[in-house]
Each structure stands twice: as structure tokens, then as C-alpha cells.
Image (cartoon, helix red, strand yellow):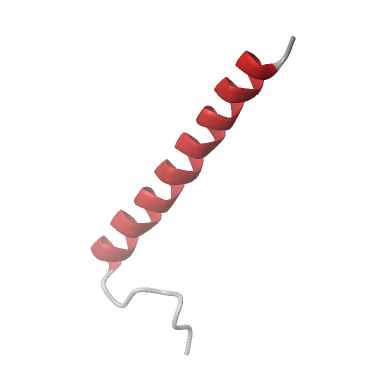
Amino acid sequence: MQPVLDPNPQNGQKKLLLVFGTMLAIGVIIGIIATIASP
């Protein structure tokens, strides 16, 4: 049993896409902040 996997494939795919999008957005924001903060 793997509780991490969602029994509904479409729901799991949407959730995975949301997590990936959030991680990507955070990475971009960190990159922008690092670019602005760097002298």
C-alpha cells in the first residue's frame, strides 16, 4: 500500500502538476530575488 499515490489517476496527475508548478514558481522567484539582491 502506497498512501502517496492517489487512487484517481486524473486527480493525481493534476495534483502532481500543481506541485511541480509550485516548485517551478518558487525556483523562479528565488532566482529573481537572487538576481536583484546580487551586487
